[in-house]
Amino acid sequence: YSCSPVALTPCCRSQLELDTQALLKHLLGEDYEISFAPGFEEALSLIVAEGPFDLFLLDIGLGPGKSGTELLHVLRDREPTREIPAIAVTPYAMPGDRKDLLGKGFDEYVGKLFTGTELTENIEQALADS
Image (tube, rainbow, N blue to C red; front, top):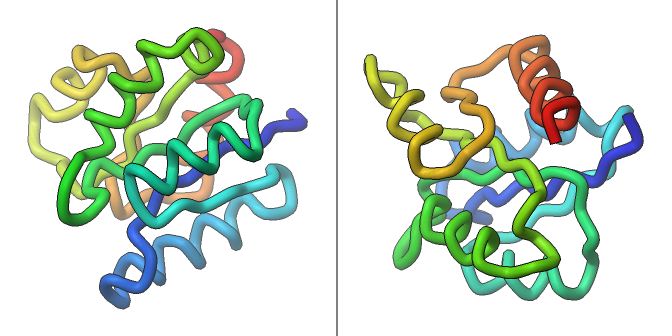
C-alpha cells in the first residue's frame, strides 16, 4: 500500500509516549509515510495542512483535553475525512474495550503493547475495507 497514516501521539509527555512514537516509525516507516501531531488541535491543523490521508492512527489518550475518540467524531463530521478509516491505538486492553471502541466509530483497534504484525494487519484490513 502507498499510504499516509496520521499517528496522534502526545509529544514529549512521557518516555512511554516517545517510545511508542519511535516504535511506530520503526515498524511503519519503510512502508508508510507517517505524520505525528502532539494533540487534538494540532492534529486538526495537520490534517488540513498535509492531507489527504489514507488512514488515521488515533491514540485514545491525547493528553489533557480532548480524547482520540472526540477527534474521531470531529473527523467523521467533516466531509473530506468522513470516510477515512481510523484505528484506535490504546492502552485499554480489557474485555469489551475493542467492542466499545468499534462502537464509537473506529474501524480497527490495536492495544498497546502491539506487535508489528498486529499493527500492519490492522492497517491493511482497515484500508481494504475502505
